[in-house]
Image 1 (cartoon, helix red, strand yellow):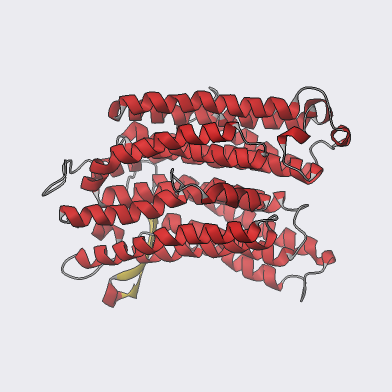
Image 2: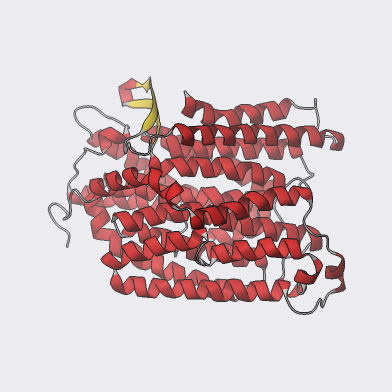
Length: 501
């Protein structure tokens, strides 16, 4: 029952938050609501750490499996499990949720109770995505994620929040509907009776035309969520208009649902199609790497710059998955975690600066190093992690991805490597303009340095960036056997049956 406990504990906490402090949402009750929500999220994080401690890294199969009959006439069951691929995404979700709650402590004052409810409910939906083995159950959690995030952006976002929230939900739902149709079709392809169980469906063999269309339906839903070029246009709007907590969760966890879906479902369920389309998806990934970096370079808004950097960095993750070998896939999974930590940290820092100055324009800053050196020091360390400097987490992930992808796509890898250089250019240029030079705006001279609450945000984030860079084996070892198992499943068939190239 440990997985059910981890998944539904935040939802139970969300319901308790609604009851906290009596009726209404008075300012004097905000502290009670915030403390309760933070306590629930910390307990959930502790539960994910306990799961990691109990996890057997030598077992490539799903562990802590829970299975209950749900709708047997349709082959639907309540089936949960965790392997080395999903383990750290669960821990990452548990790690970032309390940080998201904490970073909104001073900036969110409207309907705090409802805000905390939606954030905890969102945690349950995201955790459910990573532990579901039944595809029907997976789809329920997949779509359930949209509802809390829609309200978080639409109610607590900035000026164009309604536009951004509607664009977010329309884009992601469009792909999801096609995936649902493919899930239903795949379940009926299982003989002699329908099944939505992933382990059963791994053994289904489809004719090439059907496999191709099912693969594309799954993949479209996942690449929109990543988002992969050219399906990325919803992301900058969602990030810019979302509150800081929403941006942290969106970048840190929700985007990983797309790359996780490619690895868990699309590629191993349809291995022929995965091999056939890998090069084309890889090309889109490299375009996204370079395009995202170039567009980030010219952004005047800090938050939009970090948003476009996500498009670029997640292109590396998709490229690693398309390599279809252990190095590339393991690097991609590691980079999912790295991106969640470092980009989540960048959004926290942007939120701190925005709370102080009520602007995110790079031109409004300058000389912050002399005013708040501690914040700038944390800013520097997280920036170095984001641009993959050795001894930081980003370096390990990108190195493994490039090593794996070079074996599959040598030329594409060369173009992808330019994204590493471009990333250093736009991130360091932004850092220089914000933190160095003269203090040109008088409002910057009196800005406070890190508060105790902000130290609580920065210390674990920076520590994890460094730990994952200097001791990667601590994280790579538990996922290794599961990655090997998935790659072997994808490599089981190499050529499309009845056609293809």
